[in-house]
Length: 323
Ligand code: 5GP
Ligand code: MN
Image (cartoon, rainbow, N blue to C red; front, side, top):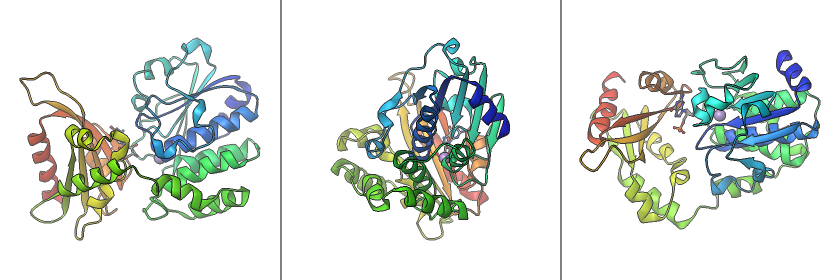
């Protein structure tokens, strides 16, 4: 922590970046860190490679996020948030690695330890918890906008204070943020209470796609391009669907396959897929994702794979044998 504080104090031009297909913690941490550094009169680029999901656009400061990184020479310091692996930043990760000092701030057990300085706390409920401590240590006052960002990160990454990463700090920091002016009901209404009709119809299709392994311990949900097209939804609307598959009685591991890119050509069924994994916390899904080249947390992890859908489904259903 001390080393990071020193780097922040001595750097003027700072890139703050987080992972593609952002979630609430990713964006909350990014915006909170960025707005805090602006208070220190730093020159800040807030970067995320993906479109901002509609449910997070209410976040004050989200408009400052750009999808373009300047040349590496334009920065003294890069702060990478919520990324288990530098490649999660997207195609521009090769630019980021050329910045003189790269700081890696994260809470994933599978973090690769990239960068020059690391602040990895796998006991933190969210990256936002670590960012909160950092802002405190920098003695930057929290305003309502920063507090809302921190609260959003904690709220979403703990699954509304329900997942196994929900720790005392989740409540203590949330209380502190509410004291500053965060309105829990207003945030919840934005994030969980305002879905498009298409998103609800996609939920219907996703529920219909659920398959269960023979021993009942694994559930599999599949979302393909045609479902998104039929409901007028996009990738951001897939967020959270897997929780329905996990809730099923006796299920220890839930998987959600979604198609991210069309494959090599029309004569092959090969596609690129993202697979999300969730567990009831008795199974380490970060380990399973790691075997496929991905990572994450004990109870929530993911990976990407080039495969045919049939063979990918087989591989996933087979995982049930070890449960
Ligand atoms: P999700 O399934 O919601 O995309 O991701 C669940 C968790 O696994 C998140 O904490 C995310 O950072 C991590 N994760 C998802 N996909 C990947 C991946 O391809 N590589 C790594 N290292 N982590 C991933
Ligand atoms: Mn996170």
